[in-house]
Image (cartoon, rainbow, N blue to C red; front, side, top):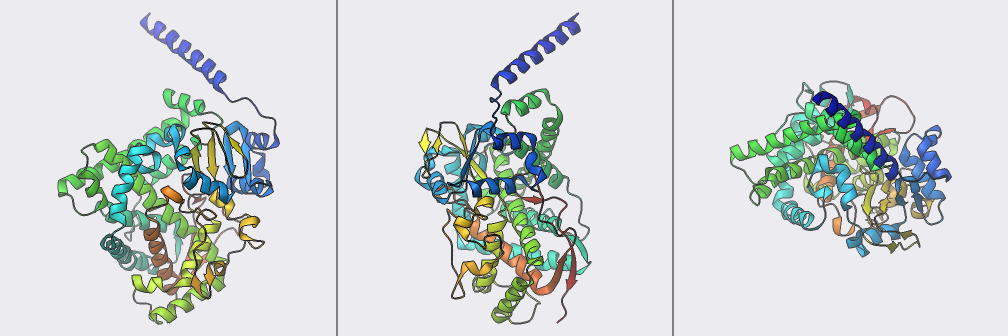
Amino acid sequence: MELLQLGLASLLFLLSAAVVFIARLKPSCACDTCQTFLTSRWTLKYNNLCDWYSHLLAESPTGTIHVHVLGNVITANPANVEHMLKTRFVNYPKGRQFSAILGDLLGRGIFNVDGDLWRFQRKMASLELGSVSVRSYAFDIVSSEIESRLVPLLRSGSDFDLQDIFRRFSFDSICRFSFGLDPECLSPSLPASDFAAAFDLASRLSAERAVATSPVVWKMKRFLNLGSEKRLKQAIRSVHGLAEEVIRHKRESGGGGDLLSRFMATTDDDVFLRDIVVSFLLAGRDTVASALTTFFWLLSRNPAAVAAIRDESDRVMGESRDESATFAQLREMHHLQAAVHESMRLFPPVQFDSKFCENDDVLPDGTFVSRGTRVTYHPYAMGRMERIWGEDRLEFDPSRWLENGVFKRQDPFKYPVFQGGVRVCLGKEMALVEMKAVALSLIRRFDIHVTGSGQGPKFMPGLTATLRGGLPAIIIERKL
């Protein structure tokens, strides 16, 4: 009898949940954009959702569109981006809706919070990442990883998935720098990483929540522990397990001068510390690896850029390839700096970013935004806007970043790859140095031939841009 009552209660709950679900669904929209999204018709013409959005934004007179079924205003208008990230920053927080989407994975980490929690973590990270000694320490770790692991590994064979290699490299580097822990993912045996697999799955499934037509869909699946939400829960448990192990290891070793030790000196909340660890792993592993992957994809199609980087490095460093560049030498390589920025213009590691409007507002282009609306600025699309970059916007042309041979920065609100305004990325300079150090070491020492389809990149769903199928390449050491 008790089992029968329990079954009836469960049935009543499911029926009630279904009623609530139907009641809270957004009304259907008959506009072409919404119907194309709902029926996935965009896949008939475009490899990636971001390419379809780029087309719509380019066609829009204001560079702004509204996907009604998602309750989402999407913009590629630099004036709107500055408005969101600087002028009216307070009115465009991450918001409770966004925090709910990533809350299970990132918790109270810096990328998922607003207000005092965000300010505290940003202040602590700024103190750490802003010092010359810490940046020097990070550069030494990157150089060591290049010389002792990356280069010897690539010399040992010929066929590699560069995306996998870059992810292993960046994971080793961020763990050594931020936590004083060496996972040795780039050791010669290329060990399988349960953490990496779990992190990738958790990232992909969390990102899929953001494109659901209603949050009720994934919330019901999470409550009932079904399908993708069941797999997400298992993946997050693995990710959190590793983060907690990092914290235990740090406590047992007595701390140190790394980023985690600084945070541990300010709080005994291990769950909060876990969320900080996961956030910095996301920033340090995925973004750098993503940027390096698409950079070498572009270089494989632009041999003139490779030749220019090699010529520049020979002038600065000489023709010997036995050592990595010093920090001072990297600063002299303006063409390399330009090539890296140009690559991220076309393929930003984070293709879009969303905020939620706190109070009714009007964007500079005249778009009205009601309270609670999700507002997304789209760096991927912005890199493809003729009105921003000119007729040759689809061409990989590092010279657009050079003036009389010297690197020249662009307006951060037309190039918001590192965000801008108050939330500008604290690790920007360190990430750029890491990318340039890795890229230069490989370009000088190896000929890299990307294999596979000649079609444009296809991206997997995720918090950062990840190539579907990786980046298979043949690596041949250059002769002196």
